[in-house]
Length: 287
Image 1: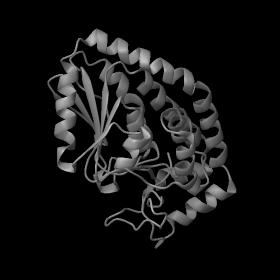
Image 2 (image 1 turned 135 degrees about the horizontal axis):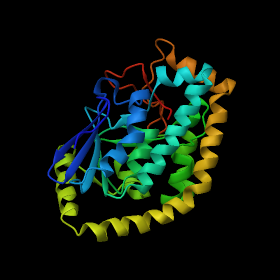
Image 3 (image 1 turned 45 degrees about the vertical axis):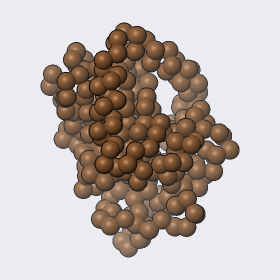
Image 4 (image 1 turned 90 degrees about the vertical axis):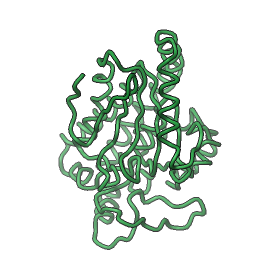
């Protein structure tokens, strides 16, 4: 079937497997308005694809999704309508992924930050490259981590561990993500997509009704547990989007020569992260 999506999110077919690719490689797949809309609306289109049985989601280039696009996020400072729409779509992404009937395998090929980390963790199975990492540095720019980290991580990880990573925004290396329960297993970078594809075809050969029913029951626990925290998280995040501290920190991030990487997180040794070559100024930590 045809998919009605912007070029920043592509869907390709391999028999019963659909690969969804976050496709802004020059911007490290930072989430802008068209990509945010696409991530909210792709799931119903996939559900309507009668030939699809399993979905892989990954990123083009070096990142899975290295945070939000700073130009887009900055527009929220003085545009309440855009701010509200981003919150509404953020809730839609979570709801659509939780109710999506097919198995979703995240192939995390690089940095998965903010909403990128949430999309990975909301997937049913998370394969992560040994070179990749997760991070949720909302707090470093004055925002509540309301669109995933604060709501999801305590369901999957020891609360004591998740607090530290959420409060500091530190990167979670691939092996640590598996240890904490935020990823299923690591793979060598060159094996990531082949292993995801092999697993996807294996799942596609399973009896579809039994597989969909099992996923639905498992996700009931998540949906019931997340109802309150997700609603509270989005409300709190929207309030902090209007705070003077968020404005100050966001504008400071956008200033030339700040010398920081797109996620503003720190490495596991707590030393400041060095920016990777080619990091665009538009890649930021939020959403």
